[in-house]
Image (cartoon, rainbow, N blue to C red; front, side):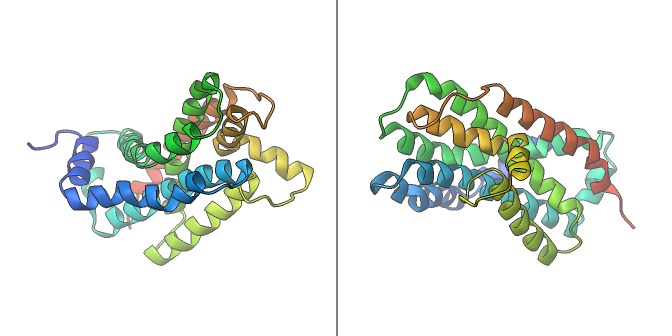
Length: 231
């Protein structure tokens, strides 16, 4: 079957190697299994899950996109009669879909094994999707400012550190203004939703996380045309 849309092309490439696909699903499960097996403080469990979403989304999106640029796939996509924002949106959505599937089993296992509040599941799920979209959107923004594959790894690493710190994932004491900035990141809201589900946090504004995810996606799509500018 020949793909007629970009997301179909990405989907077919992801599923064509059963071995690679199996490893992609098993690796997060193995790496995050200590959070479920061992007696670890709840804030570390919530931070570990959220950091995994941030790391996999940013690095996966940025590395794959810079590879598409280096093999001139973006140049071929640029000549299609499709708006650049539409192509980038499909790219973010299909990558977020596979990232979400990769991390869904560890998330459900870690959350479900604890004494959790089922009513928080909807809030967690909404913030989870928003965090996936934002992480992949950040990967696109990293590619925009990166010239080479070496730069993309460096900037992706710095992005994970800065966004993770602002979102409260690394338990770093930040000045009050910086702590407030973290609320524009859906990762902070996913962290709060998990802690609320375990009874360790007061309810925050449930719809703010998804709204921030939409805002990051729209902002990235607004800048996406720069990906298709070539010398």
